Length: 209
Image (cartoon, rainbow, N blue to C red; front, top):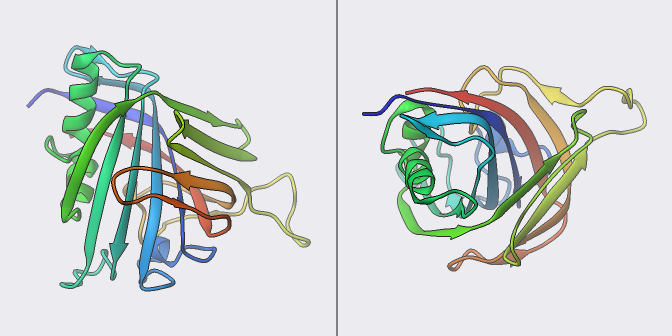
């Protein structure tokens, strides 16, 4: 297995009420959940192949509580792999994110009951350094984004965050920053949806095999 390492940031938007109960290792708000997951690699490699600056987007749905060994839980996913990468880079990202080469993606990938499709398209990612917003776009197929959650008793200079999340999609040890969904439109396989509202959160990630 090639040595690999990915460091970057991740966010989701989903159909659960804010805050998404899945982050607390609970069942989704409505019993099932439509989601878009976005990963942006700032520094990474797969063997000698650089993965710096490339992105991956997943569209999918799950039912039940995937965190507690629920035998009825299912998760179906499709992936957009960043077409800005060459063939070797795209193949490396697919190996990692399909869970074939271990690390946290291998553990999280074991929860996927069906990987329906992998497509290649340019992934465009943008996030404020202070996490006041995060957003991503995949051509005309996906447009998702959120602004940082705040409220009348919150310090506007600080983010609403969760430490030691019981159900972190990027693995243990990272801090979640909560956001309010501003846009959520996605087309891919039969996961197409468009709605406004729901929940969003941002995590950094740092993975090795």
